[in-house]
Image 1 (cartoon, helix red, strand yellow):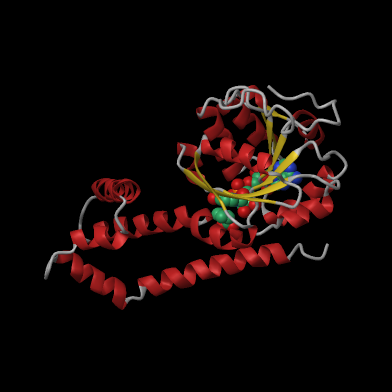
Image 2 (image 1 turned 60 degrees about the vertical axis):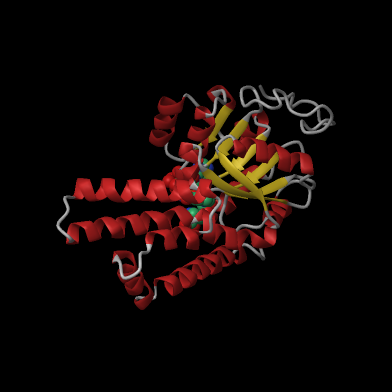
Length: 296
Ligand SMILES: NC(=O)C1=CN([C@@H]2O[C@H](COP(=O)(O)OP(=O)(O)OC[C@H]3O[C@@H](n4cnc5c(N)ncnc54)[C@H](OP(=O)(O)O)[C@@H]3O)[C@@H](O)[C@H]2O)C=CC1
Ligand SMILES: O=C(O)[C@@H]1CCC=N1
């Protein structure tokens, strides 16, 4: 259920909290602006977590894409002005390169009663604060796509006008689709490189390991099953055992056995150094995306 948008004096996070506090059903009305890959992941995750699809709005540029989403999840298409009027939380999920025209559309229709949540890589909360009405609360979030299976890692940071209540609301929302950590905004570019892009690194490794199976003459379907189940098992051990990754790896690595022969090749080919350089490059790109909007 949404809150009464006609009362300018009482933002919904003040005095009495949000309707339906503690449950997702009826919690609040959310509008996702730009329902592409991550926007759809959020909508889908929230629907699976029990959020009423009629309280989930979205905007999209393509009519075909919009009707697909309506059909798939029962969520509601809106335009930016309609979304800003109805929703308590506006989630910005367009590419950083597409932010300017969206900010132009948002500026006249957003005020301090609406919480703006940005999922955009690199873009600082100060950009939204500068372009939207004075006092607009902004929370910057870096989620990741495992949101679709309720296993996201999201890191959240408050902008200048976002209170602890705003952060708590975003935390509660995102907790229904995975884990949430609060981080200083200064760490968001690094977080983007680690967990925002992180799933891609694992997919890339899995892809390479399946190729290795093909090289060794294993049929693709079997190689895929062997590697995916190994990934799921390893991830579950990492998440549940409380052991350091080194300890878990050592337990697989027998003296003069097979694993150490593979590890030697990984070291010889600089895989660890490549990972450090790769993640540093992703961090640098996130910073660069932010700098592109510094002086407008
Ligand atoms: N993908 C990921 O894993 C993650 C992405 N992010 C961040 O999320 C944001 C979106 O990324 P992603 O989902 O991958 O990108 P997508 O291109 O898949 O999604 C963006 C969507 O927004 C639409 N769009 C663009 N401008 C507007 C507008 N003015 N009004 C309505 N819709 C609009 C695009 O339409 P069209 O296709 O026509 O351009 C597209 O469908 C980025 O800022 C990214 O940094 C954050 C964490 C993870
Ligand atoms: O590649 C990107 O720019 C986005 C941000 C994090 C994951 N995907």
